[in-house]
Length: 250
Image 1 (cartoon, rainbow, N blue to C red):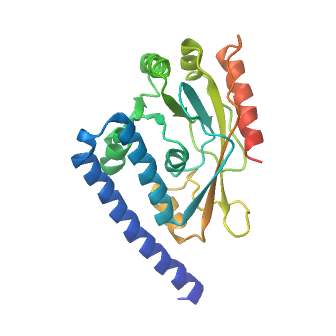
Image 2: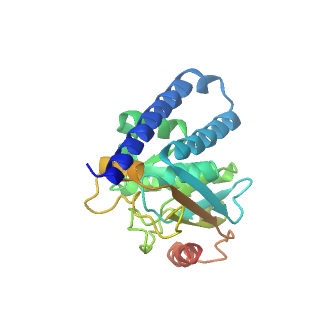
């Protein structure tokens, strides 16, 4: 085996061991400590856990702009990878809206539920209305929510059109939306890193392994100025937020 490949495989194996250990610690904390934690303590624990997970993956975090200090606010970000949620939690704890099948994934579902994820059956219009109502209630309670309006992952070079349905929650709650631009770059060269991508024919295991094998990666989270609906209907608002997200990724 070539020395470079051997070095990368050994590095990936070490990172994998540290990753698995960290997942176990997270599950133990959820089982034994979360029942005694206040909501603020849970939120802080999730953010600290996410930051530590990034370190174990060889990913550093760079935050640009000002993350929201308090809610209500709906974060709208582009979607590249399974790693996006960890990166967003590390930058600012928030409650994600995610497809309901994630709740049934053994380890990931347990972690996502503990982090406060709201689940939606994307194929069900009735369930979408339920989630929009639930999101509006959360925003009225001054919470910070987050969505990936593209509805799927992209390759990191472009931003897909935004679905507008979930923007209705911000309109109903009279809450602002904050655009968020995400990107992954090689920590040394600052060139785009495609290792964490999870798109097309990629498998989750393959994407995770590429990330473990990769040279150090920098995850950039760029928070833009929040904006209110100002009378716009949801489709027009979603389109303008998308343009803001595109600009934040430069």
